[in-house]
Image (cartoon, rainbow, N blue to C red):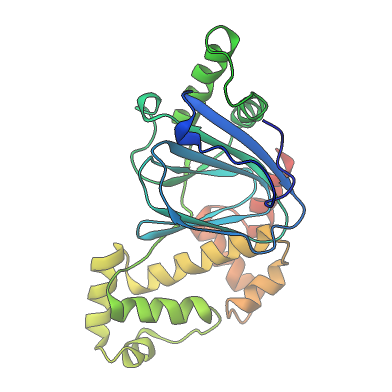
Length: 267
């Protein structure tokens, strides 16, 4: 399968129709022009690895951001939509349900080892209908082992389904610099503070404050991967100073935003 250099005018073969354990291809696109795949499903599970740029994936009640040198695993049958902006390089592998017993049963973002990256690159250069057995079978077996062993990353934002809370969430995502308090957001939603806190916890498994912090982390990683500076991201998230943003980022992901991105470009 050749590496895709454009999202237009290429011959697409539905992976579910290919009788192979893994169907993979690569992409090296200078400008995705806001490309978006509407909600859809595959019988096969899907692993998306990002080398450059960032993807956002909405998957059945959650939002995942995939920064460079990370990947997302989407189980077979899960309803999902994908959006890309700017340049994008990476690999995409579809895994037959009969082969993914050791893989996560739920959608998750995972870090990518050099070995996993190289295995996906090799798989992406196989023909769709590659010969089974021999070296190909061994390649697929090792790739599946590496997929199963990949470390899960906390780049997930659970999305509520309650209309009242979804309205608040949509407003927060549209204006992430708005640092309104719980009281202010409760007033906007015509709810008490206690009701808003309880509803958020019940719908997302997080407190209101924790969910808003996670929103900031997800957006920060997305913007940084797109080339924004730490200063720009801090300002766009409504932080009065860069150090306060860096402190929040470090507490959430265990390292500073600069080091987090540098590690993904140096592997």
